[in-house]
Length: 83
Image (cartoon, rainbow, N blue to C red; front, side, top):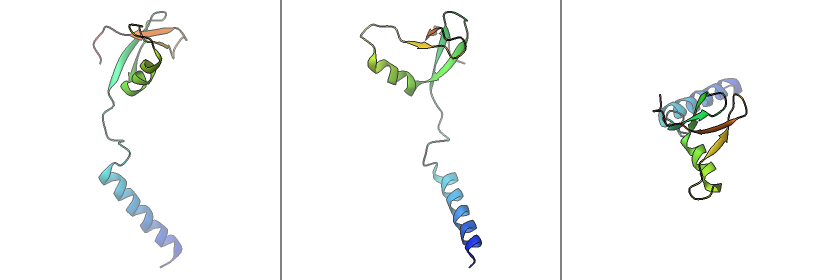
């Protein structure tokens, strides 16, 4: 078997494995939390695992604030229902 044909077979096998097993969780739904900017009023869905990382450093009863990707202002968890 030529080297190119062998590589093609290996690539096909790898693609079949990735499609069947989803080893990296690429097909899983990502849960998000809706944030709204105090300044520009834009909203942004932030993955919940990112929000949990930010919560590690905050003090008890302190409101979580993140930087707005649109204007650089302060985003807070929105009271609106998610999309």
